[in-house]
Image (cartoon, rainbow, N blue to C red; front, side, top):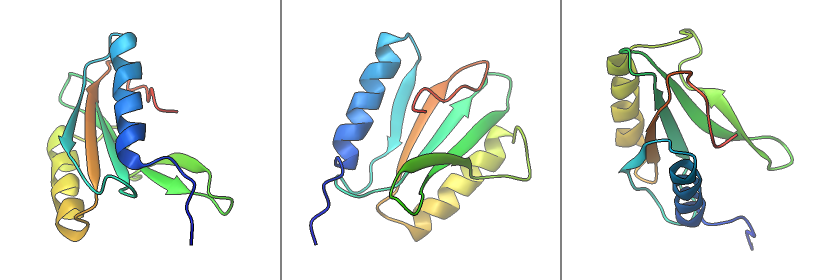
Length: 109
């Protein structure tokens, strides 16, 4: 089966370039599968809280971002880090990007 979606590694590099052009500090904390890895996005708000978002595809294959910790509007960074650790131990293909934005915006939307 042929998958014509952009490889994750290319998509991540494009996203990092976009962040850089907007003056948003961003870094890859974990590299997953270069072709098909799912991305977790940690948006640190610089006050000890953050947003933790994960990718999800709809029935048409369109990417959307959803809260990985939906029961908490702004989880503590330590809670997000624990989630990332658990997710990474289950999924070796997982990518993790962290960026800083006081308003918790997702530049990848």
